[in-house]
Image (tube, rainbow, N blue to C red):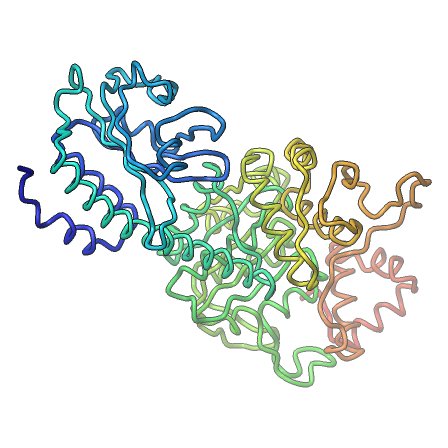
Length: 507
């Protein structure tokens, strides 16, 4: 008579996590039959995949293994026929030998049951494997097998529900990611070791308040990683404010970061709160920090050292509580050697370094990134999602993507706009750096690249703009008034007169 095993169904239904449930299910069956091995298989479009295996370290090598649909196999036969079978591997032509090629100890007898949902659909199979000589351990008594069949039926329903729930959860996460993209929040997408290492470092850094310096090529997602650090930190409910240092004139940058008092200069008719003060309690992200003028670097150093800012024209300092995350694609060690970046500021910013990998170092992420951008931007445009032909995907996996993820994002937008059919073919993909040019036509004339968008100049009065312009010229020419006046297109006396009216002096 079969042994009494009342805890078997209870153990299954008490477990909610899919991974633990499938392992517990398999362990119970192997223990019930007193054999060495067991494995769980799920039906996929391309074949039958092992999702769990137990019985020694080597057995676990099977997890993830796929038996092709067009090859004979015991699990394939059981799934397609919906019936239990007993197979002797050395003699049964259905046995797929490649599955055990890496195992030192081979199976001698296999008992395989179908996994069936409540509606009768077969979704997988479970193998109970004997490795003893002649398959002597498996109990094939009629009553024993009938009881085992009941246990498998109970377990297969519980496991099927758990797997379906896990699939729905994954789909929900994908949808959440996609909706975030539609709202303008590009998600961090990738599974490669290089990407995962950077993401893990970012999430570890989020548990601290130390400054982070993110380095990497243009288009690798530096701002996205900065946002992730902020979103995972204790500051997540406070402001996350961004300033691209290279996108604003030097003279205006100081007032943007630190603010100014009314009357600080001609045209300053009201107080202006600077970025650091506005972000109090939160995070300030300084992009392209390597382009910051030396005159401002000392002031940033004071923020990091003393947590203090002083608006232009104010005699008093103000205490702020901000975390500084900075980013650059420049080599700051070379900038230090060239005298354009302060060494003491570098060490203050580089407390927690984070180097982002270029796309060429994470090619396995390309298919997932392409799927994400195709789905996100099709959703934004309210058009059916397009798919990539196999050859087109292969071509994009070989593409250099010198502009990294940003270049890929722009390419996907181009393809969605220019490809009329549902499938993107290789011929639809333009060569690198030719997006926007008409094919089979003369190259478009060269144009001067537009500068990055700056501040809203309409917020400034005529006098404050003139003040900023004059300061920018003086800083550029190291306060040589003659050279600054020549660059402004006026004579020195006129320029000198304007400086006096604006209240600007070297002192």
